Image (cartoon, rainbow, N blue to C red; front, side, top):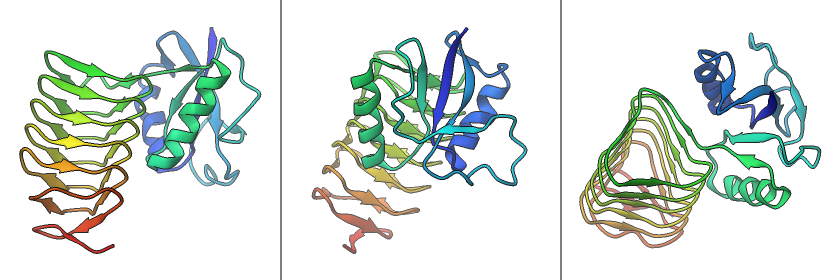
Length: 210
């Protein structure tokens, strides 16, 4: 069986590890071989039966291997995606079996959708997007490439997230709002108006803090 690597070995990677452990560490016909991380001590103290076998951006993988991008940092996801794409390594899209994926939902390569997430209908999801546990994406939404929705986020109808938007846990965006590229929405924030690219927003209602 061909080899699978989790790219990253932090908390989010360990969460994905726990999900795939229920399926004997097999995803789409690939068997977990280990983790790829720049931090050799990341797994110290955890009861995990696999090791960090190389750096996150590895040149040792074969075209018959596969990776799951198990990090949430938007810029780093972009670097990882472009690197493994250039090597011809298979970049898996992982959707947990408890997630709800409705009609006319297009999901890009390398996206990770975690337990109990909901993507309702008529949604466009870019490449290497993270939709963490219990997050909800409403109708007619676009999630740009490399976006991250942390746990329990709520993206309501007709929202547009440009590339590399990061939403902290429990953040909410009201309908028809556009969020610019690289914006950060702080945990628990409620976005009620357009967000400019590269802006950090926090609060209820969310206001620019950076």
